[in-house]
Image: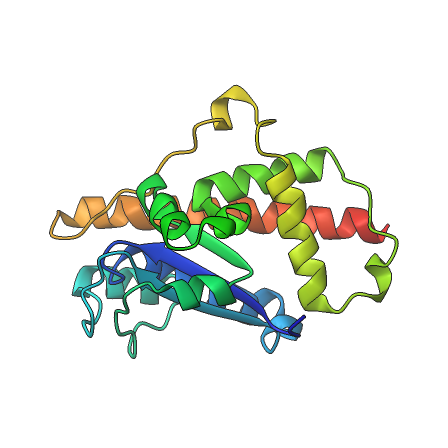
Length: 206
């Protein structure tokens, strides 16, 4: 397998939600896990992308406030090749998860809504899975792939409050308050995922 772990973030236009999430994930890796900057590749695309467009000012300003770099973002249309290359697909809403799976049905095992993935990682961390025999010898990218498998295996076992994860609200052409709420939802889900991933990593290395 590749020594790179590829994350693909998907929304509709690829100018607000997925663009922000891409930038926030990249910023968090750089700040908190610098050793993974050469391992984890993050990109984004849209199921109905505004191809060639940059981010609206409202989304870009909020991205900068939370460590993102929106300057060079250009919206791209989602393709089957992008999905095929991904190790993890994070959709901003259930409609985007469905769009990814329609393009490539076998991607269902690695495709989650952002809030769903956060809840599944927490579930995996609380119900620590058995390690593969060769886990200590795996490279960092393959260890991350194992974590995705652990999250996927928890589908169907989420507590009632997480069984129907919420979509991240689409702020495009809406008020500044909606833009702020959309950003808050993304950051909250990433916070949950990061905390669970760190605890899970500490648990398997103990």
